[in-house]
Image (cartoon, rainbow, N blue to C red; front, side, top):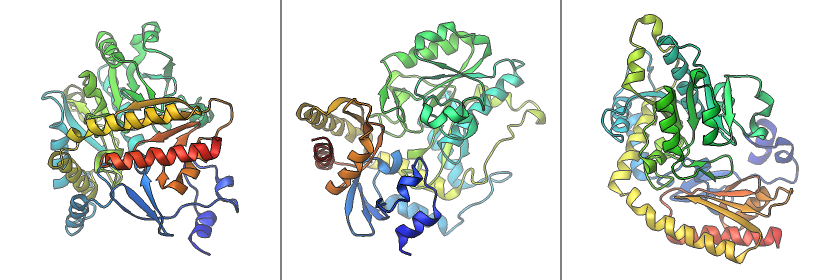
Length: 416
């Protein structure tokens, strides 16, 4: 059997209709290597990585600084327990992450593996915090329509996208799902442990943008009602929206923040849940209040070394300072795309995150458009009829133009 046949025989892929994948007509790409914003398959074809390898890659593939950091750490140790011991990369990374926020705001870092576990950690942290404070009735969470915060059972409790979560909606932790921030005033605040949302934009909902000022409204509501604010910056963090974190656009500091995806520059699984001293200090009162939660690979030294290198690249290459011109150029070519193609019914953009919504009928053609876009050198994915373009921040204007040109050709081929 060749590689594709072996894949179809042995592997179960995430978020993938496997009957279609395993059919004789499907032609999965086998990605062999990457360089900068390009990935290459085993047939030697190149593609612009238009979804940053599922929204993770920041500085491009095979960046020498991150590669070197990983190699240097591997020559020391690949992994050691974070239960009862610690390691230098994890210590330095925690210090670096806390330094990205105003002093006396977020001050503690809890490491885990991915976005789901970062959110799972945040939810358990919030519940236990109120138990310690003698407010065990505060065990419910507020989420919003079309929310996605991960797939572990606690995190999926927050999910409000039927195709992902309806089978599990009666299980998990207690959640109230709202359609708007105004509905917060109808909620029994005495039951609420925390409000959870992705700031500025909902990713898996099809790149849905929040109204300006909403984040401040929610922060004020939480303050007035003694509930916590958990911000899921797994997708929006590390420059995607034009600032290091999306919450900076409204100068909001949460009580708990979840980070993952771009944390290591898109190289290795690593997540972090950041919180305040107020919350951390509550867990210090007796052994019975210890936070008994963790993962075998928490604080993994190789992942932390990659993350440190990624943050250093932000500084050395002035990554954030380069984004406004790229964002403006993306806006321009997306406007041209919409103007020249009636099949594009909406474009939603936030920084280098864009959702291109197609058609508007009941037929789902987004995945087909993405498959055809491969023929023109673009690799990305769709959410229903919304094609997502979220490239590495290292992309340049010419590559942005090439990407949207490939998408336009694909739309024309599929839809006419």
